[in-house]
Length: 312
Image (cartoon, rainbow, N blue to C red; front, side):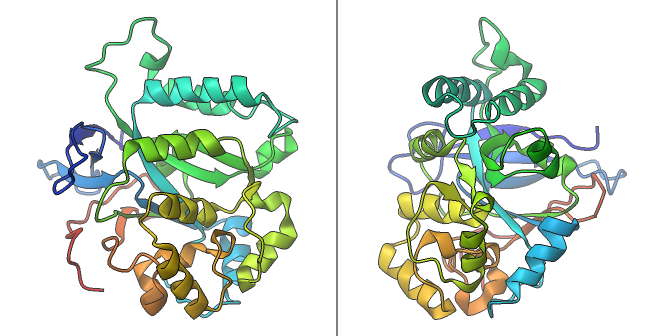
């Protein structure tokens, strides 16, 4: 296939807690745009890093970009959606989704079973998750995408938009637009992302409360509400929970943008280097790397850039 994804464990340097291989992982993308090249290109994805999407569709593309005009933060990449990279073993994620489904039932997404599609997609990419005895050498950590999202097709069939985990290769292959990675200078500990994902799996997307979405475009939300999550709000909450964002620093940055300093008001463009002085991740993450650059295409480009000490 055009897309090839494989993760190799890599202990994060300068981290006293990085005693296992869970701290950081590298993803290999096979670049088919240059078929004569024989070397393998590597793009490193650290756990918890930012994934940004520029969509060419009507709702996630044109309408969202129009709403973004209500703030002064530059967004030349046209990013309209945010998520975070979740580096985890497929079997753990599959079993965790089943466990959460059993615990929460369908209370969060009452009109449908919110976990079935997630489990089916993971099993399709990683058949070992359904094996009775898993070969641990085969069940290595892979890159997943944790996001609050939904689709018109799902809504028609009764599933409201919600927070979910999907294989990153599935997301990138099917996305109608560009995909960017912004890797954190220091990976978020795996236990932090595990707890975060378990807590929020199935939680509604903010679209169930359109007024809150509208207020977010103006930075006017005043109540810290976790019952429904905007896509970029998910990323902001993880970065606050993990300590990547210091509360006071986050407050100062958000107020400089002109938004009330709560995660509910964080928009995708606030998390990019192109936000310039408003960049919430300034000095905390590297430059954006293009994972997919062509509309309606499965071409993947790995760009070699430094993740540390990069100039903004």
